[in-house]
Figure: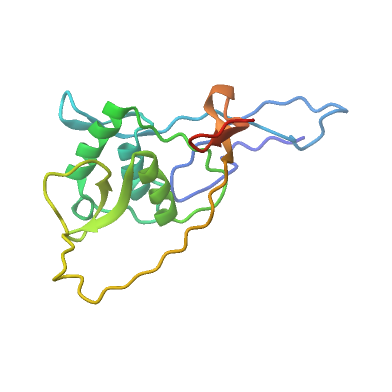
Length: 196
């Protein structure tokens, strides 16, 4: 019923905001039950043509990984000296070549480490630290062996692993991008099984 000419939200970091102009009626008085927004991330994105990082919309896991480390969502941005940017550039091209993207609906609280792990897995990589820099290990064939297990390095090693029987299929809930990120479900059958 009143008008105030100032931002309704104050934050020390930039926030994406939306404004609504709603007429109050007998059906709507004060609170919206639901509001959906389809948002895109504007981040530093590797451009392999110009060999530079440029600001643009991207869902490439390497760009989003860097954004989590250096974007406004982190209280203190990680400086370039602590990020393995060369590997992120290689990973960006690997993701682009293979069509890997990260479009997860993140409607829950999560640590930086868990968010990085989710993004990395979408790009077939794992979170790591190399020479003191935050980086990823890309899941692809390597020409250099990092570790070699031989009888000399594994003398006296013992291990045990119990294998539980696998189910015939998995019911996988997910946010379906083709249905405006509404909840959906897919049944994934193990090899040799189907709905029968």
